[in-house]
Image (cartoon, rainbow, N blue to C red; front, side, top):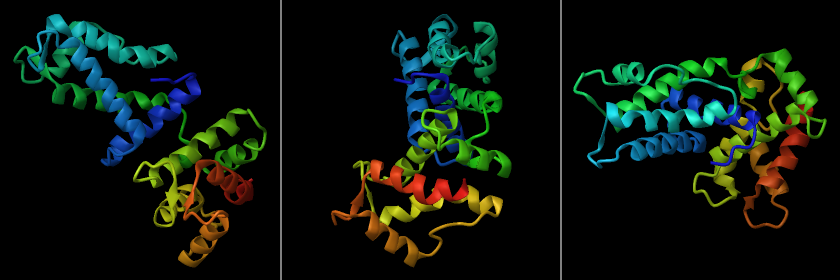
Length: 228
């Protein structure tokens, strides 16, 4: 998985854990975290019996801890025996993938409280400050808003074709303006008529779809800058 810096890791975990906490498990980042945990289990299961024994467990722990450790989050500190005992609740001397996945996700949810608050969950002062700061290209706020706009786009792109259709557009707008609504700030494009008209204006070539770069330019100009 190509996460290049701490900011990207934090955004990845924010999204993955939020999806898990909501019980949806549909966010791309949650799916990637699921796959990381699955790969760590498969690496450890050296006898291919679908279970991990205490003798096989250390490589699984090392694999799971590698990504957060890389960015300074030592979330798996502790002994192999301690973690194994906590996961092996039925005491049968082995861990199934279901047990591992459930423990790891709940463990990450607990540890994720040390992450910065997600952009779309910040309170009014911090939210407005980030919107204002995002006008400075390359700043931390600029990157935060960029990744948030990917979150909106990916959530809307349900068929994973890299484009957002008119049917998918409402979901993107809803997510992009959710924090304004929560904080009592003015909400743009709140009616179906406004959204339909906006989609037509954005779809300049008439192919009935919007690309991410089109969405990014629109969102910066018509949503984020209005808050700023």
